[in-house]
Amino acid sequence: MVLIDTDVLIDYLREREEAVSFLNSIVDEIAISAITVAELYAGVREGAERKKLDTFISAFEIVKIDGEIAVQGGLFRRDFVRSHGVGLADALIAASAVSCGATLVTLNDKHFPMLDSVSVPYRKQ
Image 1 (cartoon, rainbow, N blue to C red):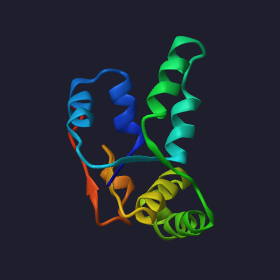
Image 2: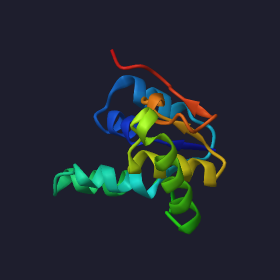
Image 3: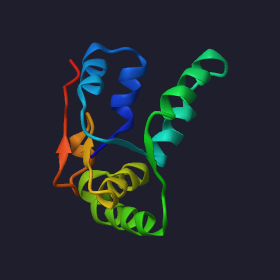
């Protein structure tokens, strides 16, 4: 299973070639964190863009934030905020990946020092 971070999904929605090619090539089960859902909706415009996002989101398994993920995310932030500047959203996304045993796919591997399994599918130029 792979858990896709918000940055890759934004690139896909913006039709960036690398992101589209990468997501279309995934054969594993794909999940996203409920935090990623919130981040995507925070920037969406009403109307056609929102409808497109609604349809897009429905294609993924969404990892809900439960008590276990909340605790682990809080601990990740506590342990990595000073050394790496990890924010609460990234800490919760990391905890979501751990919870479902997924490899996190992100463009910001530096935001996830707490994870052993991080994949960067492409680099922005």
